[in-house]
Length: 416
Ligand code: CTP
Image 1: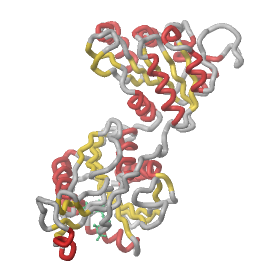
Image 2: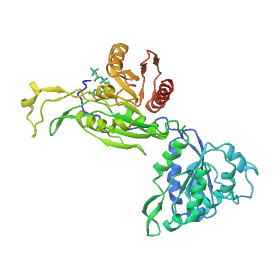
Image 3: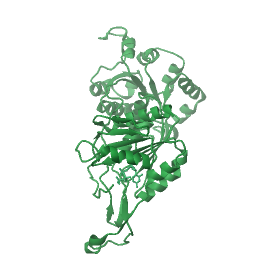
Image 4: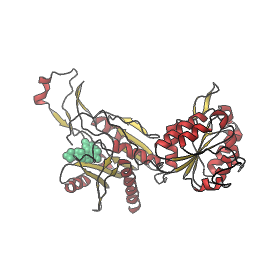
């Protein structure tokens, strides 16, 4: 590929195919210092397009007022078991039946104990006992309380009964001490919730993904690169993680932040990327190479900035190593997916690469259109399979495409 341009500094990752979008989520808030963080979580989820209902325990209301949650969710907050409710006396049943997922933030020792033993004596515990949808429990408390044997046994019990527990982080606690008990960042909780809403069909897979461009330096201020934003590779990493995989993302220089829960190795050149991939290839079960690797690099590197007249007319270049080809040649049972960016003869070029690089699947797109390819949030691709099958997909956002690609990878896995 030869797209020698500078990366657009405006590149931003968008909210691609967010699993919480349009979902009905109940946020249970309990009485702990971290209750104020539940407000931020609510805002993150609302911004992602979720419909949120809030249930607060009596103690929670000592820390944050229900009005804050009511204003931000646009819904009445459930605070008392009894009293006039517009939706009748069976609110715990109606809300439970209308819920796609629930999250409890912060989950105190008290609610954890009640949930573990089936106690229902307030709106939140009554709801929790009724709801069939998945629940994410986010404990946060003083570390001595958290490490207390009874609390640990109750947490174990919750996990054994199918509740997902997002364990607290070790860090500075509100009481001035340090230890496990700190509520994870709200973005981490939101990501846990997204995962809860996705099938865990990639559990057990170790997936290596390459993303972004590479930069091949000419001198300290110039390099050869291409306009790849990395959005496709990052979307793949995020989706794979949400579906339960262990993910390693090897990324060239991008403006994107690391996806939650994904191990990221940042590299600059094709050679760095080659080395990072080769170091990890043996431990992977699936590899998706979405990086736009520079095919050429300067034959030498100038230690000092060169005057323009000194390099422009005869910059000598040499080919970089083809990472995907090297991986394809040596693969041992891994499923290997490549990308092909073409401006013409899509089928011929893509199928040529499929064979030459020993791939199971190649994702081909015609670049040069505004809504597809580099830096765009959407992509329109055709899939070419090793068995000769062709599948043209409509224009869609890169998150949705990432989901389809992993569906297809699992189909390939079943068929071999
Ligand atoms: N690729 C790679 N290492 C390279 C070049 C490409 O791993 N040095 C990978 C890309 O990540 C992509 C696939 O190979 O998955 C096809 O990349 P593309 O640039 O479309 O094709 P090239 O093989 O570079 O061929 P050409 O540029 O001549 O079309």
